[in-house]
Every structure is written in C-alpha cells, then in structure tokens.
Picture 1 (cartoon, helix red, strand yellow):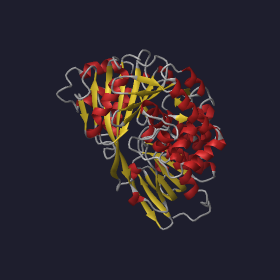
Picture 2 (cartoon, one colour; picture 1 turned 180 degrees about the vertical axis):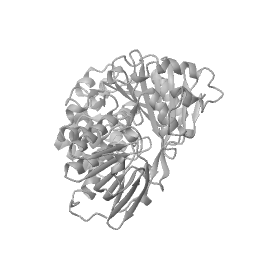
Picture 3 (tube, helix red, strand yellow; picture 1 turned 135 degrees about the vertical axis):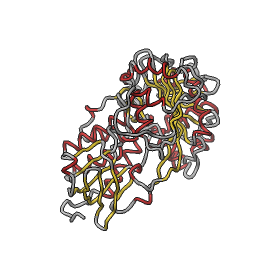
Picture 4 (tube, helix red, strand yellow; picture 1 turned 90 degrees about the horizontal axis):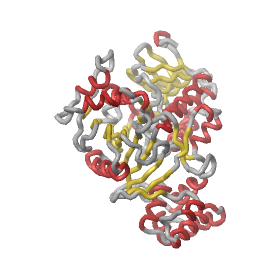
Length: 486
C-alpha cells in the first residue's frame, strides 16, 4: 500500500517497530484474520535486533539510533587501546539525504584527538564491509526453546538458517579459558576435571535428567537458593560452581535464583543437547534475532498484513475504543496498537546494559566455529564469538560480542578485560562500546495501546517470544473483527 493511500484507513491492529516481539504479534494477529498495518520508522527490519554490514552499523550509530536508548557509541579502529576512542558518537545527524563519502564522512563528524590514523584504517575494513554482520542484540536460540518451537509450529523452520554453538567457555582474568563439558560423554572425556569433580557433575546431571529425582530435588530444596543447593547437596565450589551457575544456568552475577528456577534452567539446557547435534544453542546465520523477526514479518505479509518501512510516526493517541496513529503520510485508526517503547514520546531511560562489539584480525577461538563464553571476575560478562560460519565476518577474521548489566562508565573496564582475556593475542581491528538503556514507556500503556519490551541481558531469544505470545493472548485473541473501529 502506498503511504498516500493511508489517510483514513482503519485497521484492527497497528504495530510500530519490526523487532522480534512486534513481528511475532503482527504475524499471529494477521494469521488470526485481523487486518494488520506494520510500520517501522527505520529503513530496515529488525528494530533492536537488527543486523548490519559495517557501513550500515556506522550509519545506524550516527543517524538512526534512538539517543534515549543508546546515549553514546564509542568507536576505536585499529590497534588503539580500548580506552582511547577515536570517535565518540553522542548525537545523531540529519537522517535525510546522502552524505558524500559514506561511513567515513559520517564518523569524521565525531572524531576525537585519537582519530589521526583511524579513518585510514577504517577504509581497509570498509573494502569488505558487506561481509560483516553486526548485530545490535546478539542472541542465540535454545535447541528446545520457545523460538525454535514457534518457528517450527508456524512452518518457518526452513526459512531461518542456524549453526550449532560448538563450545561453551568459562574465562577468567588470568586468560584461562575452560570448555564446559555439555554432556555425560563430555564429562567422562574431560581432561581438566578430577575424578571427584566428574562424580559431582554426574550426580547433578543424573538428578536433573531423571523425572523422579528431579521432583524430589525440588521438594527437598523448596525455598532454597540455587547456589545454596549446589554447594550443599552437590558439594560444588570454585570453577565447578561457576560453570553450572554462569555458563549453564546463565545466572547473573549477584542474581538471586531459587533452586527450582536454577534446576529448571539446567534441565532445559541439558534437554536441548542432542536435538540437532552435540550443542544446546543454535546461532542464526545473518543475525539470529533479525532473521527470526523478518521471517515472522514475511508470515504476516502472506496472511495479508501491510508493511511500510521508513515511515515517520508523529503520534499515537488512545481513544475510548482504540487509537489514532498519525503517520508522516496519513492518519489511520486502529482497535489496538502494539509498539516498541521507542515510539512513545514519554519513554524514559531506566536499567542499563553495557555492550561491546569487536572485529578481530585473527579468529583466536577457531576459524570456522561459533562459541559462547562467560567471563567471571567480580561480575559476569556474556560473550558470543562468531566467524564466517555464520556470515558474521570475512575469512580470517571473527566478531566477538560482550555484554553485562550496568552503566558503561562502571562496566567498560570489565568489558575490556573480558575481551582481552578471551582473544589473547588476536589484533583488534574495530571496537565499539555502547550503553543500551531500557526505555520505560509505562505511561503510554493502556487497554488499547500495548508497549513491548527490549532485548534483555540473557543470551537467548526465548524471553522475547514468550512476551509476544503473552501480549497476543491477553490483547488480541478475543479481538472481534466486527468491533466498531474508533
């Protein structure tokens, strides 16, 4: 539909933003027979989960990012130390028109005193810029998780390509990286575990896998914390305790997790191994969250949904029976609106994540592999290592993502330490640090306007899928197509 044809149109559902949550809701609404309009103000799909070439990542940072959500992006190029950013992007430039010189010219506007040789080094990377796939929110799919089940249920499994995550590492400040044994076979074959440690892990894995023992375990430790149960029941300590808590159950540092929740996390992880191979997680080619979101968008379009990219949203005004959405080229009416918090004028930044993305000049963890890692040192940094095997980097290079909860001012040194401990001697070609805020748009929420969430600190995509399914069930499953529109 051309934008000039929008004026006065009525829809059952208007969805603003093409992130994973919004795209799932749009596809389910269209499949249920609702008339759906799906709009994104950006010229690309994926929202907070978008995946870019290197030049497009720079364009996003300088032109398209929401500065309420990402206040600054700090970029270093070449062998510069991590604390000497060549470019500090603390604002955005005009989004209209072309910029002569492309990405280098955009970055030059934000140059610091450390940028002398950075633009020349950047030119070398940009020669192969389309061979990079840089994700805003790098995440994985648990083999028996909600995303995989949803893709299969919708018949989308063949449209999203994945590769198994071959290794799961625990990394420490002394640059030791220990591979986590993912199965009973790996435990037996491990050369780093003592016989006593193998017995402890086998006891835990057996209790988690057996239904009767699992139920008894939960009954015995009802009300207990997960770490207390691991220490008391299974006598885990030191690196063995870190491995189960941080690398398998994915417990945040300082996070209080009940024994039930922790055991269920380990059980889901263990149950995922063997479904598609000897791995618990799958990594999407070309960007997991972005590709999944686009697959649901395609499903919505097949079911009759209408799509418009690059359309500015001026306002969303709730009414007693729906909402009025003012777009750049017309005003439409809807019974329900689902929107990313970026579309709420009242949104305020709250909780923060600190993220880093690095391009490595040498694939230090393997040239054709994908790995998950957890850095533990007074906190936990989650890391994802990807290569040409997932179309993330040219041959001979790799991309390493690192993220942790907290403000960048307090977490930057921890991210830098985690990166250095993981890559060892591999040269850094490009590094971007950014603080990503959760936008609180609760004031925009109403019975007619639903605000979605943003990517969290977890390594998986399942929380976004569950949230989208809950939104659809609560707000749209009973929406009548013959309701009177505003």
